[in-house]
Length: 180
Image 1 (cartoon, rainbow, N blue to C red):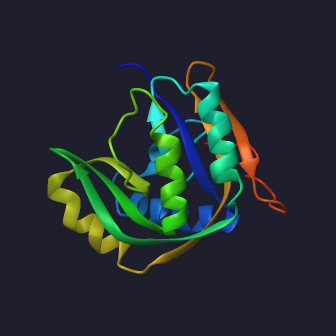
Image 2 (cartoon, helix red, strand yellow; image 1 turned 45 degrees about the horizontal axis):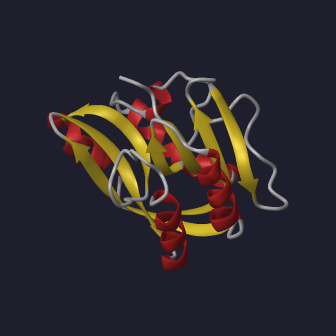
C-alpha cells in the first residue's frame, strides 16, 4: 500500500500536551496508543486531506485559505470509534464553520483524496480490538479538550519530510525532534 501525502493542522505545544495525556492514559491502561507510533514525525494533528499526491497548486491554495486563519480555536469533544474488527479511537474536533468551508474548498481540488467529505478528528489509537472499546472509552473519559491550531504542515512520505506551509505569528513551533 502506497503511503499518503497529507495536509495537517497542528495544535500549539499546550494542545499537543493535552492530546499526549490521552495517548499516555491509553498506554498506561495497556491499550494501543499513538505513543506506540515510533516515527520521529509523530505528533497530534487534524488531517485536512490525504491523497497519493498533493499538487503544488493545492499546497498554495491551502496556504492562502487556511494559513490566513491561523491560529484557530477548536474543541476536541466526544470520542469516535472508526473501523471494523480493529478500531481507531479519536476525539471529534469541533471547528468554526468558516474554517470547515475553507477546508472543503481545498479538498475539492485534490484528486484521489482518501475520503469524501471531512470528519475533523485527532487520532488517539489505532488497531484497538473491539473487545477493548469500552475500556478505552472509560480511560479517556468525556471531558472536552480545548485546542489552538497554529500550524499547517505537509507530510511527504516519499521524502520522509514534514514541511511547515503556514504558521500563526508568535508561535514557538514544535518540540525538538517532533515533526508529525
